[in-house]
Length: 483
Image (tube, rainbow, N blue to C red; front, side):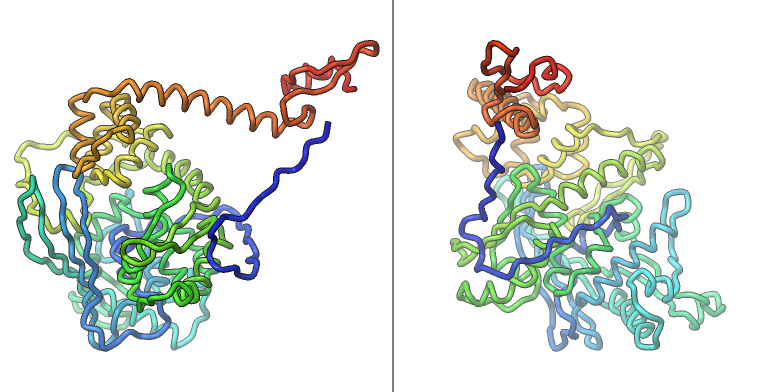
């Protein structure tokens, strides 16, 4: 019996209808590992024009450190008067620069100074050799050297508030343009830049987000390009939910965009960029809905995200076997907090970082994602030492009647002390396993060309005919001729 093809229905409440976007199919690409802090704080603003006469781009919000602390963080991007705020054009060159960093590693590490030629960067960007493009690269170096990031805020610990002083830093600490004199008096034959300490540490520790640079360069809208690094963070944190929400006002603050009151104006501004991201598979769909703050976006994970995750895990497993992990990763929050005194005890020698299973990686992502935001170091420690307890407590958390005010601190204590798990957890686990088996059976039936939608097929031995439950194995089913 021939089965009807499944009906594909569009998402309800989808944004205002737009022309059908051609879905672009791209081959597997190499990923550029881009430093994560620059992506999370919205360092680059989506525009092709210089943003001058702006004193600072300011973003505020709460951050959970994962060890019982909540921090209200304020990040200010302070531009140089000559160049204005970093833009999408500077982001393009930053991704190309970080691609070049991979070829500059010696024994797995990047060291200062980093030397590169303008021709190398233009080739990665797909731009022609011209005087104007060469000047743009020199401007990019100046912008990364002169733009200041200021971090300040307040720390909340057990209900008490403690302010921490603001710190200020740059991406590049020093730079010498080709043809200019170096500190030793010689003339530079290439551009040379010295990365700041935190940037160098994070690059060497792979505190990064992966960017498919080939697909990125195909994007036409500045907002779409600005969203790509942010999407890598947000999609990863919400992989299990398969969607995530962003308040419109928060998104505008992050992207330095003017806020509009009416939905039609908001859609008009974002629709071209979001539909472009949809066409390239970053997101499957998006919606704009009312919220307490006015409006919010809902984004659904696209197939490209899942394909990229598989490719990334394979590459990471290979990389772990080859490299030794450098000793320090510093997020912007960690940079602002007091650092412990270094131990006088010699550190033991470290070998290769052991490969982790897909299940351990999934648990790690749950701990570091919403609503827990456990620090990466602590999440790795818990998953490696108590994987069963991590799995149990994460599964039991949604069943809690009273939601903790500090989910990160709670989940750490629950795992370390083996908190009581209600019987409903085991019942929910049993139902989930049954549902998984049911889904697997439905997928098996859908893929089988022999049976009908119920999993049966009509067979005959020449005399008697009847319905038979299909085994979905062609060799076995060949024994029973179809009616």
